[in-house]
Image 1 (tube, rainbow, N blue to C red):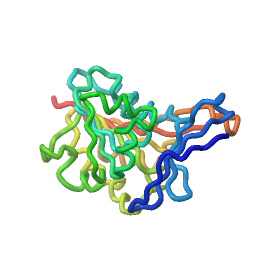
Image 2: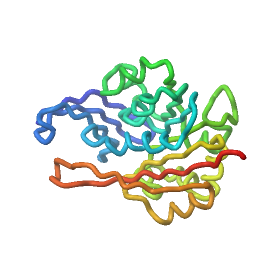
Image 3: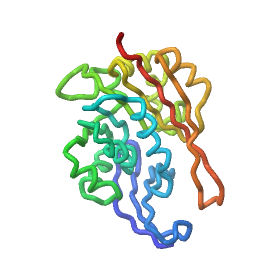
Image 4: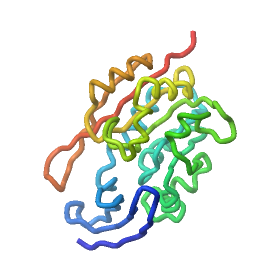
Length: 239
């Protein structure tokens, strides 16, 4: 395997590295990987569940002119999948780490060109969790309601990149998040693990419809199937 380090940054949460490698398990294709300190955050080798987050969430919507928030940019797969829907009128991508936005704007990563050239996509360098505690995700319109909020930042609702994120996954945190979703709108959450009954119970105490999806995909490194989870929670339409 041949490795190329594309970027290295010191951030508030540690060493952030973007690298590209040629891998035999991917037939020699280029694989993009992101590491935070000594931990792998994401890889372009596995992105089926990130795409499923957008597809499963947006499948719950009707009409046109959708206003969407994507929390966590990563390698851009959820955001890129959302933009495949012509009904999306605007997409705000909330990302706390400036280098991750920079990778896309400089087109260092696979979805960089697609996202940066689509006029519907707006990058917003901010802490998603702080915005959820405050006046919401539109810097120009406090309290603005969205058709969909799609979140992929932490590993799971209880395996967090930052302990300060924990309050969002509580009953009160989910109530705050729901307050920024339109009637008929949806919240979607990616998880490294399959859906957990405990968090489904929290969602059921806040939203009108909930579901937990298991997304299976091939893991060529281990030579077997792997699985992630996607939580979907919907707000009923007004009568």
